[in-house]
Amino acid sequence: MWFFSGLPYLLALSGGCLMVSAAWASSSQIASEAAVYPQESWLQTTAESVNINPAKVKHLFDLTFEDASTQGAALFVKGRLIDERYAEGFNKDSLATSWSMAKSFYAALIGISIELGEINSLDDRIGLYLEYNDGRGDITIRQLLNMTSGLEMPADEHEKMFFAKDHLAYAKNISLETVPDKKFEYNNVNSMLLADILFRATGVSADTLLRERILNKIGMDKVTLWKDSAGNPLTYCCIDATVRQYARFGLLYARGGQWQQQQIVPRDFVDETFQLRWREIPNDNIQIERGYSLHWWISHYDKQAKIFNASGKFGQYIFIDQANDVIFTRITKYKSTGGSKQDWGPIRDYEISNMGRFLRFFKFLEKIGWYNVERDIVSPVTLEDGESKEFYEN
Image (cartoon, rainbow, N blue to C red; front, side, top):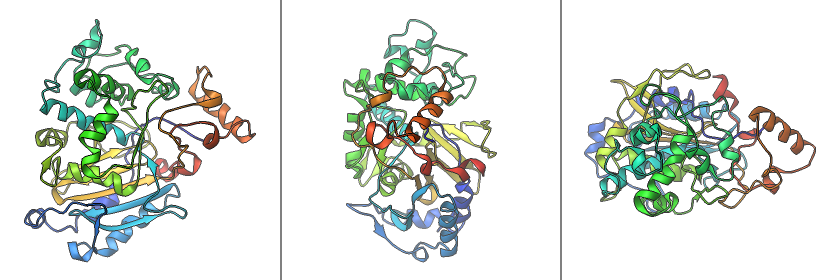
């Protein structure tokens, strides 16, 4: 079965990550050293050299690869690659798609636009940028980023948007359902609206902004940024990159938005992101207390550790322990269909009324050979081997 969108859940990996984090060198030791950044490649070192118990690192990777959907994972400490592991048939150069990890990337552009004076503040009404003449115009950018906009959230959780020709038009047509800032509701529409807000504020498309203002500056120069069929950048999902490339973005946030001597994302925006905001978020699958802040998930927050993560639907993660300068990335199995602009091929004109029935129907058509996902469509897709079973069961 193949599924789409970017609904986040917290993998039990965080427990493994926390088990390792107790063995880090102290943050004062780290701060006293010159900051190391990757150049074309990452510096590699041993666990012992950064005061980590190798047995705990092995346990973290063993836990990660108990899940057959895992494509690759890597651990970075103080700007150095400590260990990485890949499933059979994959390696350090294998691409994966981010799903909702992309939300954290595009959110960073809001902070940069505020710093440049293109956006006044996080508390700007979105009506300043979008043509809303109803209550939606009073939603703030902060509320979009915190998933508290109050915009309608149907039972299919807007999975239909992923199959729309124009995702932005779909998002802008969603009505207000509840009073903003009263309820956390993870809604991809909130993130898709960033595409138009950023364009209206800067005159430049969000994917171009992301490349020019962030990715090219941190060495993420060989990534795919997906667009819909209408040419809108998908600001709620879908950046194709490698494990090591994703970790560069994690390091940028772990270092307070700084890369080498350049402040790329404003420090105060990163600091505000890494605060405990919404917590006790209900979820049917994950029985762990979580939080959310400005398009980042909070997976642990106490005196022991403060761990944040960018998260994607099937268990794609960039975990950050900022105080200890630690990054852990994990991606699931992915086979690129090529290109960067969606083309649904033989299913482009199918009218979706029931998402579950739609997915079952096309699974059947694929099984009998009527079409082939990898051959007949151009889009990010996660096939059955990339669906994290342990991710849901545990």
